Figure 1 (spheres, rainbow, N blue to C red):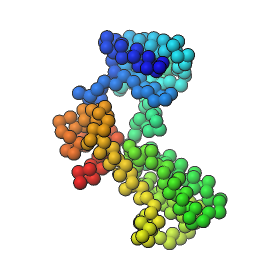
Figure 2: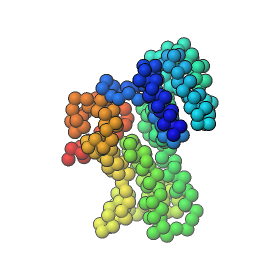
Figure 3: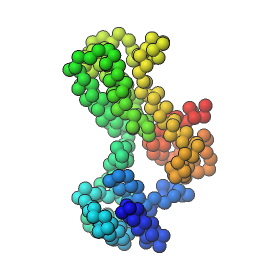
Figure 4: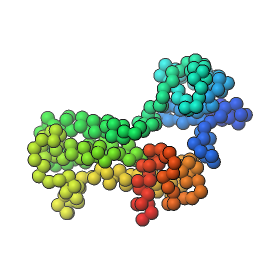
Amino acid sequence: MCAEGFNAMIRRNEATGILHGVRVAAGAPTISYLLFDDDCYLFFRATETEAEVLKRILKRYEAISGQVVNFNKSTISFSPNTAEQVRREICDKLEVKEVKTPGKYLGIPMHIGRNKVTEFAFLLERVEQKLQGWSNQTLSKAGKITLLKTSAQTVPNFWMNLMLIPKEICDKIEKRMNAFWWHSDSTGGGIKWMSWDRLCSAKEEGGLGFKKLKEFNVAMLAKQAWRLVNNVNPMVTKFMQARYFPDTDFLNASLGNNPSYLWRSILAAHDIIKQ
């Protein structure tokens, strides 16, 4: 109830022209906030006036809900064309520190740099941690199959749902899992008597039914593309269409200029959706 009141205060100030959200492109809906559990992103114009209004709304929310905003853990990011003096004034007004990128939201990086392998290296580390934790246990082949399928292979699933994981990362994860399958650890030593591709074949074809991570990643992204085609989430579709294919539909969309990594990832499944 308190969160809904918070939303209503922002919407009311927007309606009177006191606060302004952001648009990703002409024709896209305006966004003022993103709320999820205890995470909150607020968007406004970089002016002292709007910062003051936002601070007043937050203070009122604190009084109503009994929840106090921890400004020491809160940060702010500005568009590149914001003057340095304005940045300092707004940071002082809101009592928050500036960061160059907003970090992660729901576990997804808000900014993906040029070196994609470095950005997604944490997935390889997480898989290796799991495999190392199992390496000291006495496991049967059936036990290893179960652990690999239900635990190790599922580590990247959340990120694969929205991001195209670099092939190098997928290959390294599969190499570690293959080493664990044939031996007691994931260091890569010893002989692998069958390639991972053959192990990924169906059981009736002589394999063990493991996933090929790269292909599975594209399949997950195809689901997101299919949601755009069928307008499953109208708000998301409006954003993507306004930014990337305003004059056509998804099936005829192109990469465009200065695309986000999210859009590049979804387009990896473009041919599958066309078929």
